[in-house]
Amino acid sequence: MMLRASLHTHVKLCGFEYCKGRFMYYNVFYFSGKAVSKKSTVITVRLSRRDLERMEAVRALEKVERSTLLKEFIENGLSQRVIHLYQKEKLTAGRAAEILGVPLREFLERLEKEGVPVNWDSESVKEYLKARYGEPSVAQSGV
Image (cartoon, rainbow, N blue to C red; front, side, top):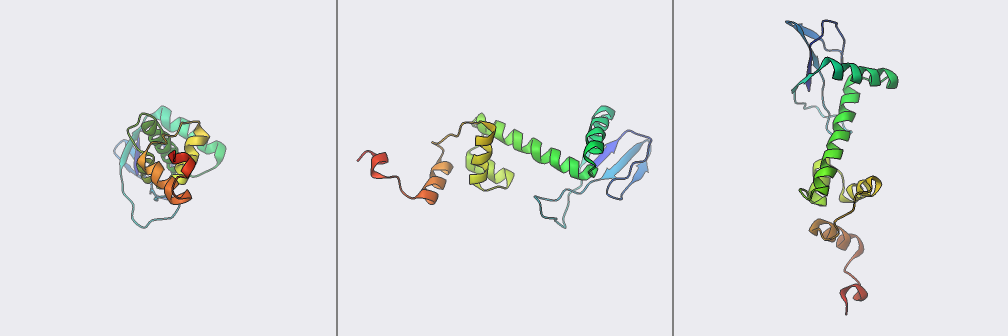
């Protein structure tokens, strides 16, 4: 991820800093999940001065690298957005878990933690329960 901030002050990020015109460019390398990946994609994000100042305030309090903070923001925001899409029934539980890169069980636990009702009629949830607990009992099938 590449951040472009309209500031004249020089701030180092991940050891990379360069100036082009009146904009500062910061290189941020996004690593997939918790494992460090050798491949990274550079994207450009334009932040307002206000957003950068708010991010810096949090960063100073937590004493973390800007890149670490941005990755946490992305992960948390993505998780919230996926849960929102699941609530609006635009995603199945299985697809939501896949997007987040977590097992279905972990996604269902996140839903429970957030107080989001689970759609137990979803095929992916039924398949998960079947794989985890086997076929429904005689009492459940009505026989």
